Length: 338
Length: 294
Image (cartoon, rainbow over all chains, first blue to last red; front, side, top):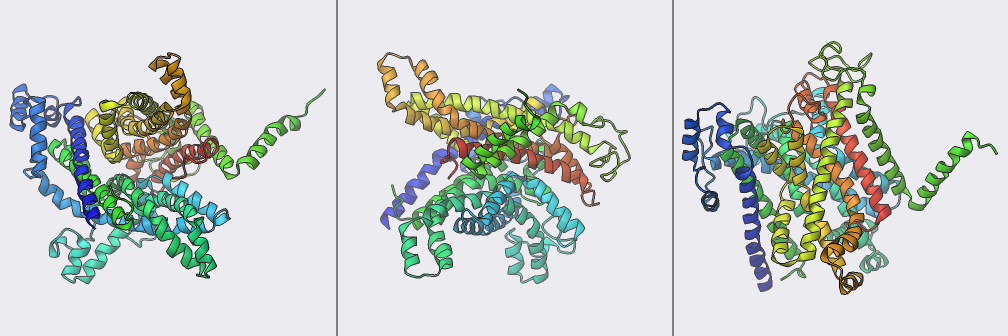
């Protein structure tokens, strides 16, 4: 137990340099690249004096290293500055949108895991058969379908032609979020106030976006699970279990899958990047009011502090999730220690 | 002696069948991928011959006509022919994705070789930076870069290229570290070969084989990222014909059921990415069966 805590502590400390490097990369990309935020925001024809004034106000005419230190200092204090276009703290804007993105990605991940892991395990069990090849083909093809196009096609089929599911937003026209809004996670909020009609509405709005996100990522998990299951199914303890007469299905989906799941868990950490990229595109397709939409809207408005803030939050999320995955890994597998 | 047509054809046919028997499904995956990629490259090169209409012409046909008749894939809201825009759009996406993969492989391989070979503090720092970029969502980085650079073919190419440098760097650096320890490298050093010779003549040729597969898969990924950026309205000026931009434009007509405006551009993005992926998968299995197992 003591070892585990030492591992968690060390691993947490190791996250700090990674976050610092990510913050530095963001700073470099947004500040040192050609293109000046102020003249970009005010348009090319703003008078020199106005531009200078705005730069002064935003602290952009200080030396680069001072700006950098100031930037890191502020991020450490969870201060992401104020929007350049709206009179609004960036953290407030993000706090408003973040739950929508988390709700979407969590459900997307759930669908990916269920489809990807089960199909992958099934394919490994039936290896070198037609069904195995079909599932592998599914894995390759689905990986090559861009998430935004899949979203549009699902909208077309289930939203327009069949008219079963809504294609945009988090709630329908007759449901007002202000009636139940509390945490920002609409599913939780509607449950808290026991508004079943709103709960159902929120849930059906979640179906298409989360399936879009989940299906496109499931291809990778099919392949990962299959490869790991193939290794595990060759192990001696599987043979031993077979000889003891344990039902085949139980061996594959209980014994083998549990053991194959540990490497899959580590890979999940790496897929977080894909999940977030997918979420941004899915949000755009489904007019989902989350972080991705916020980022793009503010890019069109050239609102640099907000753009920077959103990207920082994404970076922190990546670092946090990879930390979390490693810690879960250490808890599940006691061999992983420093 | 006379050769018949059938005899001439039987030679390549036998070759294909033999390879198919030796490598199984992977060979056919490779062939399928190569065929798709070749077809689309040909389409891009011969665009003016393949496309029935000018992709910019706003008098190609009626507004928002469904597929059929002279318009294989229908027309859009500006009365332009969708199929002609698909044909010309292939040029943009191929140019950007292949060029981006070339740029990132060049920098990635170069930095990976030097960093892995030289070692020391610079290598440690570079590896940390590359790892950080590697775990960061590539699309978000590309969005930020594309937003900073502004629209343009070279700008979007560079924005896409940056996010793949760590992939090559990590692969090449790892292999360089391993090959550096080999006996033949030591022998070369003992004979007085310079670092440049060792890197160029001994390490680089051994590293390049695996990067071929990664390059192909990288192009497939770059295709989807390029189209994603233009779908989001970033990266290219509206005067360029591009599948991602056509998809974004078609999205507006989705609620009124104009299915052809989104179906065809999106399908082409998928097919092109699938072609490169299958090419890469097939190559990987045939060149190095253990590479993609994880």
